[in-house]
Structure formats: C-alpha cells, structure tokens
Length: 467
Image (tube, rainbow, N blue to C red):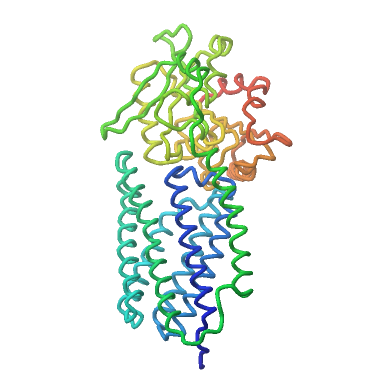
C-alpha cells in the first residue's frame, strides 16, 4: 500500500510532543530526586501517570508512523513491542499506587522493559534506520543508558545494602534524566527532516497543532502544579519545633550499627520502675512521612510515642517504647531498611528483659503502611498491630491471620485511599483472620486524635499475646 508523504504539520506535531516528553521526564526526575520512594504516596500521581502514559502513546505513535513511512520495518515492529511493554509497566505502577497490589511484579517488569529497550536500541543502531546518523546516535545512547539501568536495578534488588542503596538510587536518577538525550536526538532528527521538505504548506501555528497542544499542556500544568505542592507535604520533614525537642528529650537517643556499617537512629524509653527480673512488652512506634530524616528528634512527635509515654499510660501499661527514624528517601517497606530495624530490635532484646510474646507495632500514614508491612512480612514477631490510614500489598493479607489487628481509616482520606485498608481487611477475613476495623465517617487523613480517644484502645493492645 502506497503511503502518503509526511507533511510539515506532521513534523511540527512530532517536535511538539517530543519536547513535551523531555519536559515531563525532567519534572518527574526532579521530583524523585527530592522525595525518593515517597513520591508514590502523592495522591495526584495516578492521574499524572495516566496523562503521561497517553502522552507517551501519542509520541510513540508519531515515531511509529515515521518509521513505517521510511520503511524501517524492523524498527517499526520493535517500537510497537516496546510501547506495549511500557504501557503494561505503567499499568503495574498505577495498580501499585491506587490498589496497593502487584508490588512483587515491579522489579521483574522493570527488568523485562529494560531488556526490550536494549533490544530496540540494537535494532535502531544496526537495522536500516541506523543509516540516519541521529537515529543511530539515539540508539547508541539508549543502549548505554539501558545497560546502566539494568545493572543498577539488578544490583539494587539482589545485592542491596543501605550503604549501596543511595548509590543505586543516584545512578537510576541521573541515568533516567539523561535519557532525555535520546528524545532530544529523535527531536533533532525530526527538525533535520523538516528542513528538507520543500513544500512550505503547513506551519506551527495552526489549529491541527494548537488544539492538541492545549489539550495536552493545560492538564499537564494543572496536575504538575498539584503534584509538586502535594509532594512537598509527603516528601519533606516537618520543622523541628522546641516542643518536638522537648518531647524527644524524654526518650534516650540511641544508634544501632550493624555488621555492614548501616546505622539506625532511634529513641528509646524503658518501662516505669523497670525491673530486669520482670518481662515487659515492646511497642514499636512508627512515624508519619513528615518525620523522615536523621535528626533523631522529630520522629517522636510524629509517632504515637507521646500517647504511650504520658504518666498515666506509663504507669498503667509499663512497656519498652522503640521509636526508629526512617531516613529521607527511604520507606518502612524497604526490605533492607526493615531488616535493619528488626536487627535493632533483636539487639535491644539481648540488652533488656523484653517479653517476645508481646511485641506490638503502631503507626499512622507512612507509619500505618509500615505497620501493615511489618506484620505482613514478619507476622511471627508481633502479637498485635494498630495501623492507621496506611496500606500495603493485599497479597500479604494471608500472612496476618494470626496477628491481632485493630485498623483505622477515614473514609474521606485524600492522601491514603480508604480502599487500601478495606482490601487488606477483606483479604485477612477471607484467609480466616478476625481483624478489628474502625472507619471514621467524613474523616480525612489526620485521624490520630480520634484513634487515641477510642475507649480501652490500650487495654485491648496490651492484652494481646502470642500463643
């Protein structure tokens, strides 16, 4: 079938969307540099992901039409293959952020996508599309970046330590950002082709380009602004006030350093009138996303530690209080970091008289996610948990059936969807567990005060004991 010549408007259209792709990739990379894995907690991320996926499909479709017209058949079919893989990968991320599921597929899907990308770059270099110098150069850069990212992803998954993790994260960030060079070379190729068209009909300022441009730019600007403003909330620690310092001063500041040299900063409080001859429960209290850092101060106020450490609670429920601090750009659900926490707990239990059948974990927001993750991955460690407005992979639900759970969530939570807690509770009940669940009507994300006012909450918690 005879193909029609590519018009100037086609190239203008392609140049616009390739330029937009460079800008959105740069924006995403900068956001990730500032906030790390916490960016996945931004409530506008799913909408942004949908929009940028549509943009990728449009940009890739333009390139596919170009490859087909130029009779770069192998490149054309390989391009369709990588586009399909990219869309599937974005769908997995969407399901992870919205439904808190498919976490186990992320790394395999990432590796498969990178392998497909590497294969595509080899075809771009060595097939007839490589006759175009800019396309060949784009393929060389894409091959280089693909190999670097593949090595980093595999290393980060299979050989990770907390010391190496920041190195891998920086490699991923800078390589992903530099991958804009590939788009810039493809854009330059379009500019070069445009200059060779003798037909002067068509221009950049016509309705066929302006209307799609506005349709793409306006929602990108709106969502981009919202994502930036929301990410400031989840990504940066709250200021350390004098009140926070005063609260933290009531707890002992401690560090745990493991054999690999990884350091966990935490605050610690012994039971009132501690007697080594007696055994006491251990309460692990996880802070929210605004208390990340290494100051070893702000996490006390950002957790439920003040609730447990007031005089009435200390007198009625003598217990060890363990308040770790999660560093910036890490998550409670990070396997290497959570391993460090469990090592620190083991170290404490060698020093103090802890009742290992009465370990409890409680947290809100990011700490709620951590509470779910801890009992989902290490259910044998905990007798009970109180997760608040958090979520995790519902696939872990069946692991939690023998942990006493009282979960809380607001049904109007704008940051952590209430569906995440509902799905985990449903999964636990389906697997034979009997969790307690309280959902606050018309409540948003800040439900900590309401939870603490629940009658007999601590009576219930400290009554739980492992069989």
